[in-house]
Length: 481
Ligand code: BGC
Image 1 (cartoon, rainbow, N blue to C red):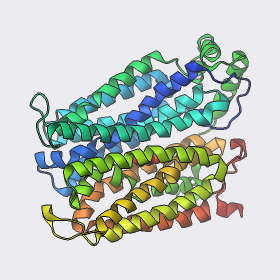
Image 2 (image 1 turned 180 degrees about the vertical axis):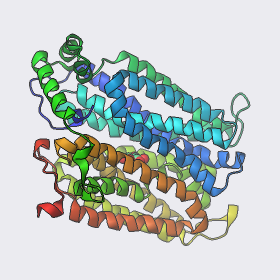
Image 3 (image 1 turned 120 degrees about the vertical axis):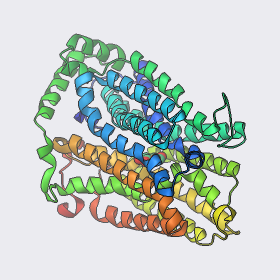
Image 4 (image 1 turned 45 degrees about the vertical axis):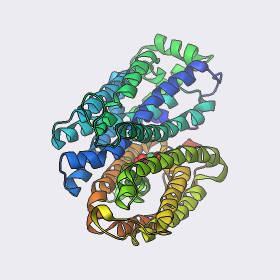
């Protein structure tokens, strides 16, 4: 379950435009939708659950971020499990974890069992983050694989949007996130419970889609693999394809963790470049917005309903700008877009930071005097605009293509784990830092990471646009010069 995620590798010979393969890809992308939904759904609930369980800012941050530790575990094991059990079974497992987490979080008795349910959901998210793009790239004909894999990132952003919209609607219906909605339960519990619906849909779709031909060949089920290749993928010559798959499986069996080991703190320099790139994507603080924006806007004097609406608008911007990345990625190249993204993120974060320094009052009576309220809003959304059009999708694109074949699967997995751990760091620290050093300083730190990200890309990231995966040298930009 590894080198199949190679965008651009030639499989040749397939007929394109198969309805069934598109339907299967979209079904698998529901996993990515749940990844977005389940990671962001806490946004609207966090204030009320924090008040309900009387949490300190540190425990509040931990309750939000603990899911991300589960994500790291899920992402690390998903590939191995999918090779052993099959892609479909792992997707069904993911759906069950999402379902358990939604119901468990919704009826949590204490913050401790809430954390347990969030870790369980996190494992589901980690699994989905690996299995959805992997399945899509295994089932898609080469010519439309790029477009179909982009469906994955789009589905994540749509999931975030759906979670924030659902949070806003639930809070609005109840009159407030802490007010009683149906069956005597407060709105914030329903925010989690609603996640059960897409989880069930995902479980059913996972049972209906065909198993990946790559897994079937690995399991020795060649006749079934040929059937899927012919009738779903539209491959006119399934037997040749099965031979191809078998030879790449053979090559893959010879790669091991040793291939990413090196002299720079135990790893090859390029592997570190991948880890740092993935980490920087989080250290600019994107999820301080997507997990905490409702709290953020309330904390600077917005009403609860305005805070919910602002969060929904930001998530729509996030979806819309992802299309820009999809359109521009092959035209302007990864490097240039990342550099532009770093500059734009710096301006947005800097403006937000400056505004937050002008907050007046304390506790519940805090506000941002004009024009700082509007500058904070524009700054934060400018940051999301540049992130969504560049660093959001491109880091995942690059991680999929910057490593040579022999180290790709391990290097990619370790990069993903680095991304989840930095996400954990930002999410666990945000409420605590906001309370103790102030929002202005926190955003200043995120802006500093945007500056670092610029110089990092400039000096370390090679341009991979248009290059064949087979031609990746395994060298950093610095080493190639
Ligand atoms: C990041 C997520 C983030 C999302 C926002 C992804 O690329 O990895 O952490 O929540 O973008 O759209």
